[in-house]
Length: 286
Image (cartoon, rainbow, N blue to C red; front, side, top):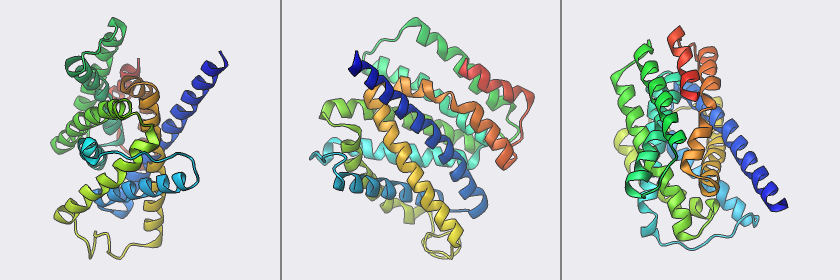
């Protein structure tokens, strides 16, 4: 009984850390894109490096013990991690915050489809019925979004697909390799950083205006560094929640972020809202 109570408290704590850090990272990243114009992939690379450094210091302080893992077993996970962060950041950059957050709700139906089709996992009728308002809410929001653009929807769709694969693999790899969230992320983060480091120069400038070695102000650099610390908390909490619950549980909980991010986008970035759009998060979260 006591063990079950402690386990439930740990899960609640992990969910709360993810809730607050996930909301913060959306607003911080959007602020960086709008006010500083920092390049997307380079920001993602900074997040990966800070995540690995955070884990390195954690293992030095004996928070966890690293476990040797064969690189070939986590290559696809590392690649999907790159796609997950890059495409979701591109979606945030090219959509309003409300549309960005609501599009992510489609991750739940896609995860259920993947797990049902490829992992032969079954879900109750109640869970399947919850997919109806989720899907309808996303469709209505896209229709009424006054900043709707095709490029933003393409990035959002790719983000949903890659994120769904990534989250399914995170849970599967932790059980397959018998590792915890920190042990898996400790090997996967630097591998993802190496992959991204190879392609950043192909898509983004390194020097001059808009380049990582460009003339950035101190506030811009401090904000980027702070976003890396918050990203570390987001990545770690995602791994922990999925490893201790399931990808579907993680995404169902994530629906609570809708209203907060929608209001925050309106207040901080003046994202326009129609009455129909305001009703979409309620429908999606119902």
